[in-house]
Structure formats: C-alpha cells, structure tokens
Image (tube, rainbow, N blue to C red; front, side, top):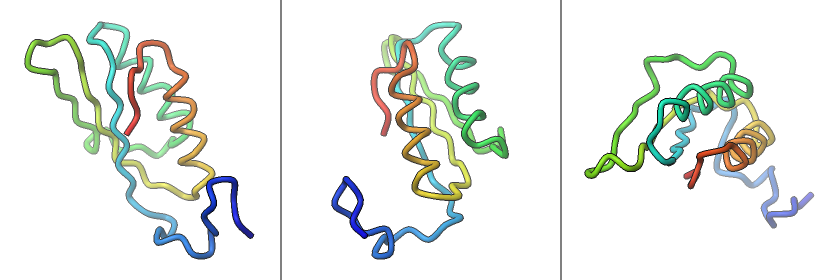
Length: 94
C-alpha cells in the first residue's frame, strides 16, 4: 500500500521504535518554549528532557529547539510535525 506521500510504509528505511530528531524554529519569546514543549509531550509523553537542546540565533531574534523523541510510528511523527507547524510562534519544523 502506498501512502499519500508516495512511500510504501513497508519500504521505509525507518524501523520503529527509533530515535527521531525534530527541530523547531520560532521567534524568541518567553512563551515559545513552554508552548512547543506541551505539543511535543502531548505526542511523545516519554520525552527525556535531557534529549532537548535549545539555541538562540546570533542576533537572538530566533530560537531553535531540537527534540530527540522515541518515535513509535510514522503516524506519530506525522501528527507531531503537523501539530508543531500549526503552533503559534513556530516558523519552521525540520
């Protein structure tokens, strides 16, 4: 069966569960990190806080936060990326 993305899940190079990094970029602000953390934990409740890194841009206008989750399925990752992309303040999800 081929999904909408044209990839047959049976042919996926990813084997679940797997460590899966997701980087979120947004405008720097006090509310950004808690808002994004809540979305990530909602989709990956077993997130280890030690596997989260945050970095400000050179001018401090933007913040990137990288989460390494234990992804259980392609559907979980797809739902998480969609929820993050729809989160206020998020400019990019990589």
